[in-house]
Amino acid sequence: MKKKYFIGALLLSLGLFSCKKEETKTALPVMPYKVIAIDKSNTTLLAEYPATLEGVTDIDIRAKVDGYIEKIYVQEGQEVKKGQLLFKLETQTADQEASAAKAKVTAAQVEVNRLKPLVERNIISDVQLETAKANLASAKSTYQSIIEKINYASIKSPVNGIVGTLPLRLGSYVSSQTAEPLTRISDVSTIYAYFSMNEKQQLDITMNSAGKTFQEKIAQMPNVNLILSNGMEYDQKGKIETFSGQANTQTGSFNVRARFSNANKLLRSGGTGIVKIPTNLQDVIIIPQNATLEMQDKRIVLSYDKDNKVVAKPVEVREVPGGKFYVVDKGLNVDDNILIEGIGIISEGTKIKPELVANPVLANLHSKEIK
Image 1: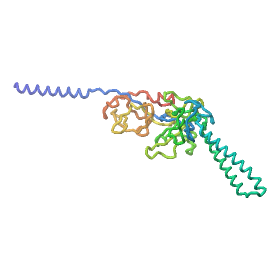
Image 2 (image 1 turned 90 degrees about the horizontal axis):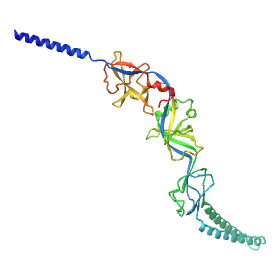
Image 3 (image 1 turned 90 degrees about the vertical axis):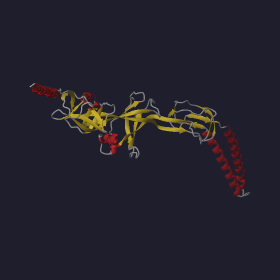
């Protein structure tokens, strides 16, 4: 009797425990998570490209003749005009050669003058006179070569520009074969910013520009900005002028050149910066980067079904410089909702309580720029 009572009590306890366990399982709360509604919008994105800066011309100044540097008339960083004297090489030996050559010209001219009347009176043949004239021409040519050599010893600037470094000093021996130039003159009245972009970026920019032909599209592209190496924005807008004719076969990138006015000579050749190109996008989906998750080389967002269970969706995105947003090319539609909370924590299939909040992308659109 006692045994039966014990078994009955045990079964009753197990039943109560099972009910308690079932109650605990079904009583787990559904947690709330913030979600945003997806919509399309018009905006302007600024793509950033590291660039190197060069002047209109950067000309190496080299000696055309051999000699020692006798005088340096300029300083590094000095602004010079076309034709301004930069260096003078020692010409003592050439001056002596010029004096001797001039004497030979004089002697040859005297000989020609002496023979002319003799030929006219048929005292001597023309051969002697022609020989004398040939000697005179040769003497003049030698003298002229020496004078040009002396002139080349005065080295002048071929353009308006800024003097670069002066690696050589007074007394240095230079020649046309010297590897290092005397200096470099940079015409920086206009500065070119050179940078590169991949094929997709090039297509995004050109296809969103007005115009029918490629050249028309380039001409109608919006002005670009230049961020200097100190982080400040240059006060002059630039204009994209050229794209390379074909992509680099090794990198798949296009070389691009933008022009910036530099009347105040603030920018110098050899500098660096970042070119910002605005791209006007119409009817695109933009989402916060922190609403995505990278999984097995794929970008994932979390949405939910009609039962409020979490569903993972792969998306194709374009990264917007600044690290805050993505432009979604594939994977999301208007009126989809995605989670912006619990990313990387919630597993697919978890039931949630969606709490719709304001889309942070739309809050940034008043500036017309997603950074």
